[in-house]
Length: 549
Ligand code: G6Q
Image 1 (tube, protein in one colour):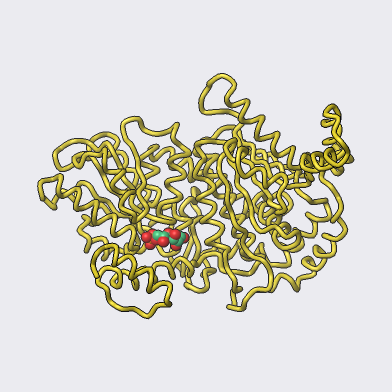
Image 2 (cartoon, protein in one colour; image 1 turned 180 degrees about the vertical axis):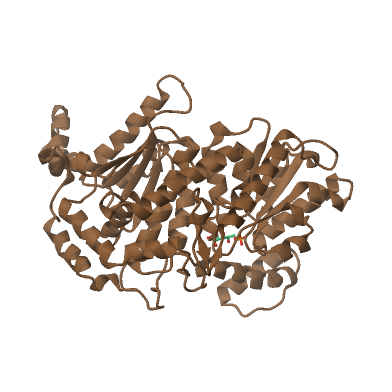
């Protein structure tokens, strides 16, 4: 547990930043034909090209030293060995156990968790097989046609993202929907076209107390029972729960047979690999779900056993530290050139910002350095027609991750080649930029007076030297997707280790859960609370417009 800023490598990096302050990526590429070869890794069907980063061999060497001096190797072992590295909640962090496809046991406090993990996977397999084969029937004897996952945050974003990403692998006769928002619009618009007789609800909630999910679950239960002619016995055929809280699930009225358990050592944003992934398994089948696990397992092995110099999540994490702490970057853009990955930035936003959006270190002391970045993005090429302007010419340094498949899931004329060409061109343009002289050359025929020419050339100049990673993968299969997600999970781990923060609690999210509970009775019943004038006026205005005053 060290303040990273006192480490020798940190100090050396601060010094080194000055050495390369005026260097340009364009010149580094021009003078070094081996640059891409040295700064890329061809790992199975993923080609990770990090050569378009503002780094030299020396930068990387110092970053690897920083990782060593931060005790990263020991911390990786602590996680894989089930130690309580989530200090504030005194919990192990073992999403790696959920995708441990080996025979290796993994213990928490001397108890091997692997038999429990396999038992729940078996139960998921039996359940998905029953639903897919039509053996599982609703209250009127019809097979299931629609599954609705009710969950929020970690119990929604991961499975929602994966299910969308694996659309080409989905079972044809089963549709999977996701409802997260307590805004009734979300539930009502989803239920609008569904039939109670053939709809199955999965209530995914680790705690089974989350206000939004429980409110949606209660309304969904009412809708179902109304459709079943008031017979509450229908709930047993139409509700399953994924939770660590058995008592609350049973109190809700869900058949204990339909409970899929997971454990307190699985953080919400790391839970898609657990029974929280049941919606994924129902969408694509258990075999595909296990291919997803396999991909993540391969990354776990890579992360645990590969030297830092060839370790992809370690390199990803260190590059982020370099930009955040030494080059002043405040955000990180994730740009999948893949419509099926449209929810990938949302998932990473939670993964990264909830994990490393922390202001105190592991001892509770406020940090005096930057921690987790703002993570944002959306699929290409759409973003090119909006925020890419700022990426190219704005005043912020925004490191970007591009993700793109070499092969499409479809064949439609030139679409995929155009998509790929755009992706590669953007990364190249961010790196190279366009000099003022090049801009002037393009304008020469306009024959403008010098002041106008200078202004226009300046507007058309691109500084370049803007960094990016490229994740080029062969095709978006379940295994490749599993790998991509796990790479980012471990990247976040690397950064949390260096920043010396707890990446596995989320007190800011807990706060939100408490605050709404306090205002609700004041809104509904007009009770007086202890609020600032602004909040009190807002409550009063709502009540007046509701005509309850
Ligand atoms: C994730 C967070 C948070 C959580 C949701 C839902 O890491 O803890 O996003 O997943 O608040 O919580 P429940 O699963 O308990 O309903």
